[in-house]
Length: 51
Image (cartoon, rainbow, N blue to C red):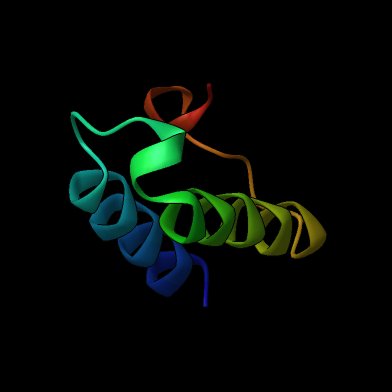
């Protein structure tokens, strides 16, 4: 699961690259949800993904 969530987060971040929150609010909310799942699973979020 750790690897899967990391890959999901990476693909989500790539999808919003260059976008602002008002352009894709649902995608940004999905990213925050994925990060919350990672924290709940005891995973550390890679620094490149923290905002």
